[in-house]
Image (cartoon, rainbow, N blue to C red):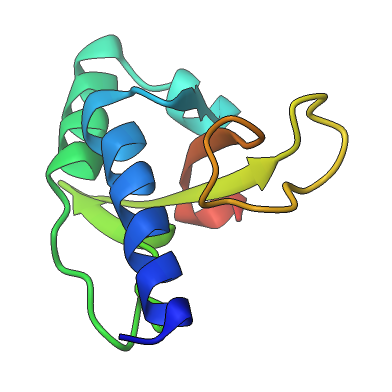
Length: 112
């Protein structure tokens, strides 16, 4: 297995942990999501956590770092970014959770 495939699998596993269990990083919601009723927030968060339709069209690098989910009439985008420990720069190594701070942003598609 190439090192790029191996790195992608590690990144995907770390991203899945954040997306599914909210561990290993921070989850933030956009103003548009925050303006929705709280019961809709719950539906959105569950839809993002349960998302499993990754493929070449929406996940070309196999890192599970971004996708679009349909939640009722809403199109929701979630995306994961990787920062260094100071949160000022991109991480030098997103496979290393000791030096990477993950941030998943959940937003309405029209906010992207």
